[in-house]
Image (cartoon, rainbow, N blue to C red):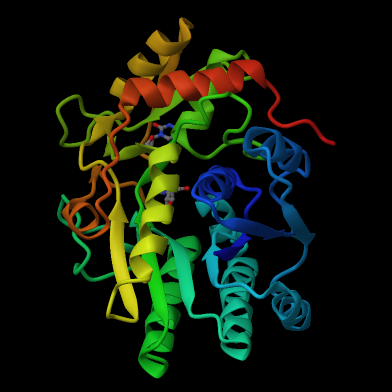
Length: 339
Ligand code: UD1
């Protein structure tokens, strides 16, 4: 298939692009490169051996998006583009709503105009909200407690409404748990701009000497070691989930399908610190800190639906995730080069 990958230069988009090419698809990347670097593209080309078309484009611009689709002859869209920092979204709610919702509106409108029916959407486990039971299952109600999370809840709703209006659409809502790790080569990985918000890039930057210590946000959670637990999954498993979902959209009878992408196994902050110290051979100093507002004790998937319907499982271990993150970070201490 000829596939438009929005946000294809980002962390998950870049890993998925490689797997789509390996599966025989042709990929066109559309990205504004606001949170990524153009140098990702050269790495993707050398890893895939393919030349990858890209467009530097603001996808909230409906006219520009329509022009892209007019030339594109896309058969499917994998839609990663969006802003994703929780703290930033609290400080800049209007930017988050206008960007994340605007992108999806204009992509969906262009899809309608140009008769593109298949869409795979990057949703998040954040849509289960603060009070969900674990393991989290797809039929649970959705909610959020910050603007970023609400943009995911709202985009899911927009997509469900589009599926009602046009039952010939085939849309996958993929609810990611906590993606970590990097490509085996160490050539691509997560490269957050500014101070990272998420645990794994912080551990990697501490190990490589860019930061001094980790603040452990809360040791009084009702978990075995008192620190919060998450369902970390390897970005390569997550990328494979997109390829599996895209294949499944060719067979499914419903316009909209929702799948959790996680391992189903929780790992605590302190377990992650030890695993990363072991993988890197570096010390990870920690400092106890209060709970981070909005954090929950436990978040992990029930991945049974994805397993049954996509034939997909996240098989890579926490040690694989740490070893691969470390290879990427130690080979690229400052992330991707500017040019
Ligand atoms: C966070 C977001 C979530 C988003 C996801 C992906 C919040 C509240 N949630 O998920 O909405 O979908 O990222 O971008 O921001 N931790 C520390 N010290 C740190 C950083 C993190 O102890 O310096 C702990 C956190 O308290 C948490 C765990 O590590 O228990 C994982 O944190 P993180 O990687 O930020 O992921 P989430 O909070 O699960």
